[in-house]
Image 1 (cartoon, rainbow, N blue to C red):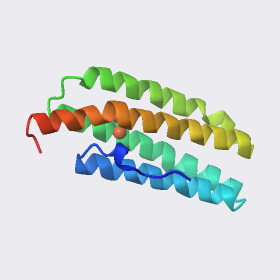
Image 2 (cartoon, helix red, strand yellow):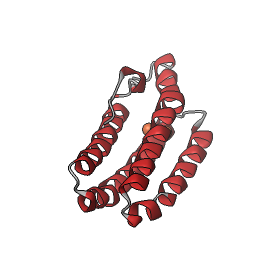
Image 3 (spheres, rainbow, N blue to C red):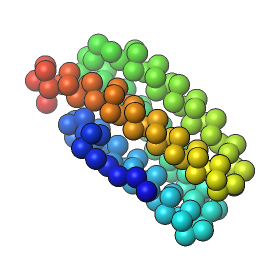
Image 4 (tube, helix red, strand yellow):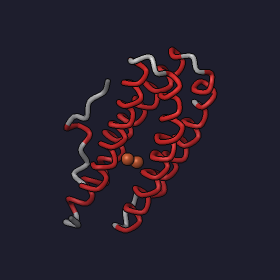
Length: 133
Ligand SMILES: [Fe+2]
Ligand SMILES: [Fe+2]
């Protein structure tokens, strides 16, 4: 199980809400795995997580556009890499091997944690400096 800690806050309310939702969805998948409900876990990952990740990345890009964020292009490129990575995980998930699936999940979470704490947080600082929120 993973926890949403203060390091993850960008202090942009809508983005924080979406990041929390991501954590919640990943935890739901872990929970199902723990209960031995492998098929349901895989289903949830495919049905909810992949689409929520896409929704979040595009909402975040729209938000950065709206605030005229100078690092948007760079940030968008990083999102693009993640989109590709997460789709690379699909075969492990399809395989249905719980160990591979767990590894794929922890990779996804590790990536997200790093991305939010290092890259996403920077637009939070920008917004604050410019007094945009
Ligand atoms: Fe984000
Ligand atoms: Fe991001």
